Amino acid sequence: MPQTSVVFSSILGPSCSGQVQPGMGERGGGAGGGSGDLIFQDGHLISGSLEALMEHLVPTVDYYPDRTYIFTFLLSSRVFMPPHDLLARVGQICVEQKQQLEAGPEKAKLKSFSAKIVQLLKEWTEAFPYDFQDEKAMAELKAITHRVTQCDEPMLAPLLPLTPQENGTVKKAIAQMTQSLLLSLAARSQLQELREKLRPPAVDKGPILKTKPPAAQKDILGVCCDPLVLAQQLTHIELDRVSSIYPEDLMQIVSHMDSLDNHRCRGDLTKTYSLEAYDNWFNCLSMLVATEVCRVVKKKHRTRMLEFFIDVARECFNIGNFNSMMAIISGMNLSPVARLKKTWSKVKTAKFDVLEHHMDPSSNFCNYRTALQGATQRSQMANSSREKIVIPVFNLFVKDIYFLHKIHTNHLPNGHINFKKFWEISRQIHEFMTWTQVECPFEKDKKIQSYLLTAPIYSEEALFVASFESEGPENHMEKDSWKTLRTTLLNRA
Image 1 (cartoon, helix red, strand yellow):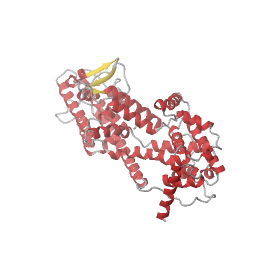
Image 2: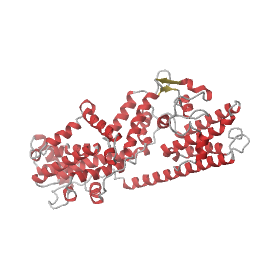
Image 3: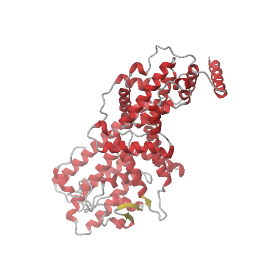
């Protein structure tokens, strides 16, 4: 957003800069006295009725909500009501405040009230622009801004006694806000269309091999033989993919589960596609690793390939790219790769053992969480973009949000919303979004990235065929599987 002008800032006043101000953590006497329905503990808001929480969002002449509260409530409110309904209620609260202020002695302060409302809307449109893709939400936004700017109408004149210069500044701020919102919506719409075009066919299971590919066929080592460079290119891809995930996408995890529990369709499932696409990247990388290993004809070269990917995973760990690291380890632990005992016997597995220790699932991935915490602390104290990189294991992050939602109820026995729960969900999502906004400092190599994103990936069936062709079955179960696979291939021929 363009910076607001000095005049507009003066209308806002010192207590409404959008920053957290001393003494502004609790709403003063708001419309209807709703603050009495808010419960604080050690200065932190932990619960309240939905009505009181909505009133706590709306500024008054002497109050502006804490920015962390704005983000948390706007993020969590969609669990209970659509954004357009919340916007409509915000407009109603503004009218209620107008009626109170008209009857009171503070008409001189009314001009700052309008600027505070615009500031709140500005923060909303910047943090959650996709809320306004809905026509109803956009209509409510226009209605509120219309009330703010049309101060020459008899009904609104007592509410907004602005000078022409002040009113012009408010109008300019609204115009800038609207323009930025429309640009954000257009950019996201274009991105969504691109994703749809690139979406892989759901029935495509990859190639089924009958014979091994020629030894001279290009593999990953023919494109990049430096583990650090490959880890850097994977980090480029990760940050590019994860940057298309928005806070409200992550909140769909909660909204969707509530809709399933209540047999209502509150969650917009089209918004979860960015989550599914990113999760699909993890699976593709795992399968690519397995493909690169299993397609190699000679045992010596397979050994080299395994050691190469171990080194790549270690470099990913050092960078802070835990998602690629976990995908690589998962690929090497797939059954078609893990069963290649003769190949693994030649691999120096000490480094691989260290990586598996970091990703040990016991005690709820305690080792990984310790490493993630270390990377987070490094990121917070970083002086360079390279030290700021933190890419968590995405499916573990999603599970954390899911279980946090399932373990703690939305409502307390007294009917209040359990806002303490949503503080924690919001904190984790905000931290994740901070990581996604880091600019990748490594030089991009289009050739390597193209290979990683477009190289043929074998299906699970094809991986087993290639694996058995490399090292024959060793027990009755494997012999039966290999016999079934060969029969299937003959029937398809």
